[in-house]
Amino acid sequence: MQFIKANKYLITIVLVTSFFILLTFYFLKNLNNSDDLLNRLENSLSTTKNLFNEQKRYALSLSILLAEDKEIINSFLKNNREESFDVINKKINRLKQLQNSSFEVQIHNSDMTTYLRSWDISIKDIPLSSFRQGIVKVKTDKKPIVSIELGKRLNIKAISPMKKDGKFIGSIEVIVGFSYLSKQLKQKGYSLYVLLDKKHLNIATKLKNRPKIKNYILVNKENIKNLENLDLENLKDYGYISTKKHSFAYFSYYDLNNKHLGYIFTSIKNKNHINLNNSFDYERVDNSTKVEIK
Image 1 (cartoon, rainbow, N blue to C red):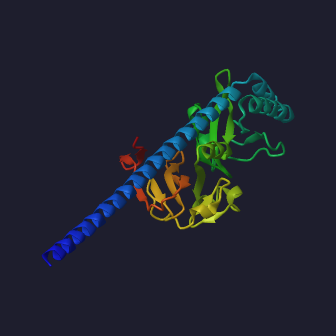
Image 2 (image 1 turned 180 degrees about the horizontal axis):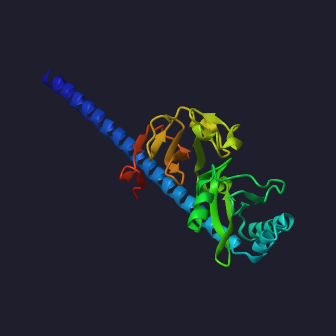
Image 3 (image 1 turned 90 degrees about the horizontal axis):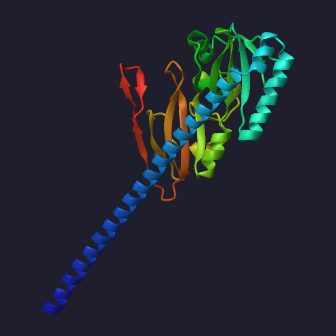
């Protein structure tokens, strides 16, 4: 009897020990999966920011190059829009072939109205100063700038002053969309989502028919259904968030006056259905200037 009782105790101890060992392995596996997912999301966040910065530098270098182009300046000074249109598109096509890139160009008069758009010669003399901060800043500072800027669309916009004998005569703008970035990220296994707050649709009128999710417009061409069930109400400046199928890294973006415009998300598959909701604020100086944590 004592032997049978001892065996029962031994079996109970073995079962309880095995249970706790399995439970420990389960939690360790989940912890490793969670750490692995966070590492992948951190990589996606870093990759996305680096690619955005590369595109901004590329757009800025193009705008500076075109603003100093003698053919463009000469046709602009002659106010020959047909010649300017031909010259601009010839240079755009050449650069597209050489660099496999896609961009558009707009030239502005010194009074900050539209002189020419590379995609539509019929548009001219549209006042821009009331809603295009970048154009105003370039005229004021006489220096090139680049940003994700809000206009009738949302793009990366690089603007450089055109000068004649040191005098400001107008500005030239290189406009880069998000299709190239989406393609680059897709090759790395990520999907890109550029969200714009709906309150800016009074300016971004060309985006009114884009897909909507809660208080945001999806600017680029991606499947908005993947964003369903995301808590978009309590986002901070950057972080990581997930649904059952997808996990996302995100960061906020601002205009030239530090006004919040929206969020940029990149996603990967959430194969292990790990729940994430980690959000962080940037450090701030004087309650106004955002300083991103590196």
